[in-house]
Length: 456
Image (cartoon, rainbow, N blue to C red; front, side):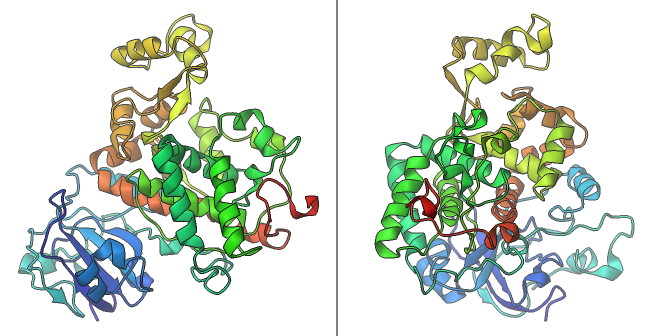
């Protein structure tokens, strides 16, 4: 037993990745043990992922490949990620109650490339023992109590979802979804962001039940707020392929959830395990869809909307980071350029150079402009750095920087991209579980994602 719980294996590859990083992988016997703040040799930010693999497989095949072939939970720690020296992490944790880690103070340690067993905190200096985050006796009593939100904490909804849901009925469902999403991505890379947005709009209206896919008069899909949604043809293609192998087995809601995850990975974002078992809803109302935020709300309205979905302020800021990729119609932002709040002048919060850029790009309402002006094709944390420079495209983007309830989180994510990378997977896992229990009894497995089964 370690001071954090029972550790099964710790593996650190000798070779570094192409980016120059080297990662450690730690497997705990129990997930809750990790929440006592795993800190291995370098005691840095812990990136928790439900990456499933055995240490032996990781050595022979590499962590990414092995993750898809085994049922063990592995946790990844980047060995050269250092906490930002400000107090922002602690401040955010104190304010919102669920953040990542306590800022480290101990000396750096070096990995030696070996496989360790049972004890993750080896060999350490006396200094390390003294300021161990898991050492309750030596903790600063004034320090905020931080917890690590993990993917596994947010993956299951009242026992209704499971990783093995399609193990017998459609064992190749995930591989079909991944293959099809990849095929479409190669044809049109912009579809990846569209799938992520489609998933959000589905879950934001009465839960993740595939109701956004229903195509009939007065459905969510026909609402004003849904007119710019794309990616329906991708889901239809996946569903048709799965029906050939496993007729009547896999729900459209599960397909959309997994497709959104795979799209995120293709863009360079995090991988998170998706549990399955969602049912498809039978009700879809355009009036409900028009309640989804349009990018013009105030922060209080956004917070209340997210809370209605069972999400919090941290999720709001992190999921807004999906705007690191994708585009918006110029018609949705032109008023900021010419007649902000009826003043006949531009929005004063816009950076002057960015304002000039937007006026050149958005001559027509039908034009499109990138949500992230600096790295629009890369999944990264530049979105938050842009907000700090007053370069948020949507009004709601920029308000995240100016509102005191959200600005500390923006500062933290801008300073520590790995924190954003980790938490995006956690928040997306939470998003995918919205109102699952409420849907199950009244739901079905649609034959066609566009219509309820009674139509056939």
